Image (cartoon, rainbow over all chains, first blue to last red):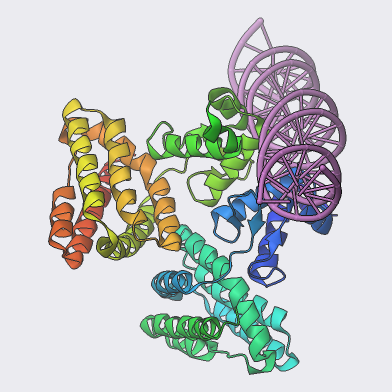
Length: 219
Length: 219
DNA sequence: TCGCGCAAGATTTGATCAAATTATTTCTGC
DNA sequence: GCAGAAATAATTTGATCAAATCTTGCGCGA
């Protein structure tokens, strides 16, 4: 443990770990999340674990049931409708704001992330695919320097993540889509309306996949 | 303390109290919020207070500074732009979804809340005005049964609240606007597009007030 | 079927330690 | 001796943990 780690409070680290567990599908929709279990799994104290759970509950990543138990919220059709609506509003806007602020180096960085995604698809590695996908979007969105919208996007991804993970595992990691080429081309061309549109299409594609799985009862 | 209260955990109650302090302007933008202070003020233990702070931080109502201290986030122009954009997207949508689901009794209830707002204006009572205004909007939005969008709206109100409070106190409680007549008329007529539009106008009006105060350096 | 008690888990408190801020003192150059 | 800077002490506040208490759900036996 080096000097920098020592300054990050345990509750922050614990929050980050638990968030990634939700986001990248270690935890499945409907799965119970217990304080004691996380104390064991994350090797943390009770206070940090409780605080991480509270934060993620506030972000919609976890659900406090009436009986004081916590679960990963299962996906439903009405939930998906709302997430789709909000994502399609917020994220293209973020992309539009971010576009003009990206340097050539940052665009190169996005391209490298996208290559990593392609590699993950070839390897059939769902976890790396999801992580790369997340990194691609939020590296882009972060450049917008729009904190409020960014927080909203993160919350929406947390709500969406577990279902997407299930779908990805279902359809097979080798058949995963990569829709980022279009966004990168728009970025290089400086066409930010096209960038926004490309992100919109990417979102719609993901939502449709989850919707289909939901209708088939696979989530 | 009756039977029902005993079942609500302290951290929930503490969260509610602290949230209302942010929402109705007991706490001003920029004001520091300390754990120890809240333990005294809210007469709660350390864990419930910490958890309430974590939740509200996740919702954007409070801001964790680098030095581990917590403040009520001050309003800025870029913040306001984002809040305006998101509110204008989410809340009219919520109104539109809620409209068809409201019973005549529920509409009567909204009208009663609005009368209460008028009374608060006459009395010059800023707190009751803000509380009535909040109740009006969220009684409407709750009917939409759209949890995700509702959470987002609540978060946005928490970010907006402290600044609005300052503005209201500034312009004088007797000069506060009540733009709900139009929304109620649209509801009675069953014209949900008009309802959505009325909510949009209401939001724009509030945002403009804060924007003007911000430009004048009053927030 | 209805209670009763047991087990798992959540809640809360208070103690203890660490970090950050503020107040105070000491030191240094003039 | 004095002003200002640096160091140090004191105080406030935050972070973490572990023990005690309370709830809830479930199974067992009447």
